Length: 188
Image 1: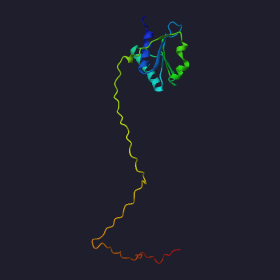
Image 2 (image 1 turned 60 degrees about the vertical axis):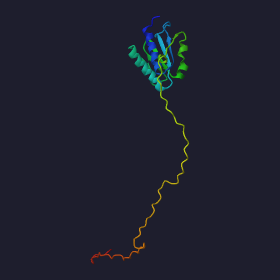
Image 3 (image 1 turned 180 degrees about the vertical axis):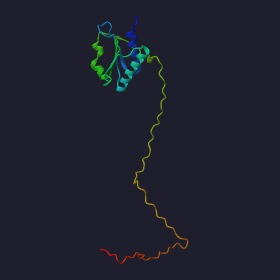
Image 4 (image 1 turned 45 degrees about the horizontal axis):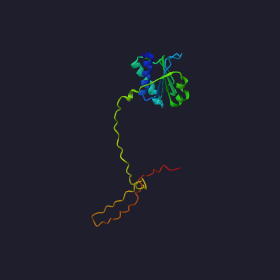
């Protein structure tokens, strides 16, 4: 059976979704049913960043591979169910709870389900280096802190070389004031 342009586009969308780790990727063939579109591509993405990544990659990959651009995009605000409309192909990216709730596969139960080959299974997986983690060794408990203040510095005494005794300082009398008051001025 010859593949149509719509089928090529649907498979291209499915491959792009798989490349971004979308799960449960299904293509529904609606050509023998009386519908406006030929194919549904349905996939699941677990979290918001993955939904965005799948949508962006599907758009980019189809544009580069087939030259088709998305006609209409819906659902990017909530990211629970994003719909990409390519006229003959409609891509549905669901969060798991929404896919389970709407169950498009059972709603379109008369549609033929096409298999999607995961091209990533044929490619060898890159080897990652594993970081060796040393087992934790128990460290002795630290001594409890008593205070964070510094202790006062110790006073040092200097002794003279002459026997080590100091003489007391001589007492001085307070100095007399040298300011004189003029006789014409008096306090009131």
